[in-house]
Image (tube, rainbow, N blue to C red):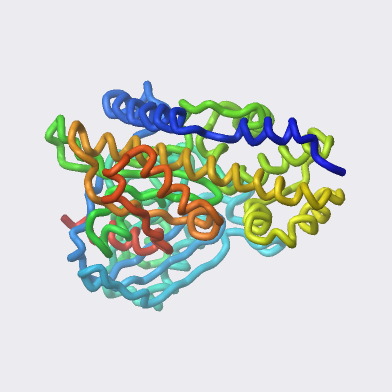
Length: 425
């Protein structure tokens, strides 16, 4: 079947963000930042304090890093050598749930069982050595309330976690108790950070001029070093939870998707830009073009990547997912639809970066910097990187020449080790 040309053009139009809209979003993001600095309750950005500035790059020593971001746990023993150099001496990884064997994330498990399991992994990472003293940094990627670097209290589990007895508790206290139960008193948890903060720390340890860290993957979030120029406070990294930014103009399909989602009215930016949702929006648009509105085909961002990259496979991918044969002249339209969604995503993410860059600059010029980004969409999705650079130029003009982006892989382990090192200052 052939697509309705008028309907196709309308969909492309709905998913396009022009220069004027882009500038407005960046300005609104900066406005929300400024509001949030005065009173986080009035902003759609959460402005969570990390209690850390940037590393000096001279941090040295052996540290433990616990990466607790989802069901797969990792504990790393990392040697920091300073000057951006480091070595992973040992890495232990295990899932918190294995079907039919054990499950530490379900409602039937307990906080003790979960943290005893983590303590066992820590023991493995230090090869059972209970003498040598280790500081442990902890990347914990769940909504937490923090009053200092050590003390992060889990507000609410997300990502299908339901372990009772952890919400409302300081996670490092639970870990400390579990380590003590197993006689591992030589390991001291000292720092808890968010995965976005870990990306910024890891990148800033390796090279200068890094003040923004972002995750652009299944989900999306950004943190930055707030200069506090007006108040004279020491600069501090703030985790924005920017996926929750609300001042956007969603398309008709964004609104439909949001209304049917688990948490309607939340995570507006994330639902318009991240890998998890892009495939779904693409599928909704395809269902309209194939006159099967409401049909869920299960497209993923990986399908979109393949569609954009390989014209000769498009018809095959569409057939496999939808059961429909598409007309040869519509192959290009399918590619255009996928591309339009990716370009919109990159542009919206960039608008949020520019809001931060304006905030950092105050009334001066944009400072020279590399924006550190981790994540599959940034790393692997065609059109993402170049459209970030294009949107930077569009919004910053000549000043964009001093700004670029760098990939920061595996920051959650290294960042946690650096946080542990910095906790001694």
